[in-house]
View 1 (spheres, rainbow, N blue to C red):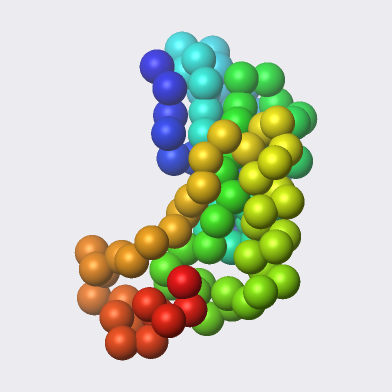
View 2: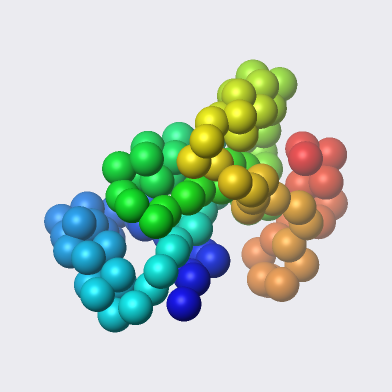
Length: 110
C-alpha cells in the first residue's frame, strides 16, 4: 500500500512524527508521498523524505497559497524539484473543489 498524500509537515505531527511513520510502515504502508502546500512545507517534506525510508516528496504551492507565488518562489521550487527525494510537482493548479477558492485572482498568481 502506498499513501500518495501525506501531510506529515503539519504541526499536529510535531510531537510524534517518528511514531506516525513507524506505525504506518508497521501497518503495511510500503511508501509515502509527503506533500508540501507552500515553499516552506515543500522544503520540510523533502527533508523528511530524506530522513525516513520509503518516503518521497512533492514541491509546489497549493492554490490556496497562490498569493505567496513570486519569481523567487518559482526558482526555489524548481531547485527543490531537482533533489532526489522530490518526485512530483504539487500541490498546484486551480482548485474549484472548495468554497473559499478565489478563482478571480488566483489564476494570475500561478
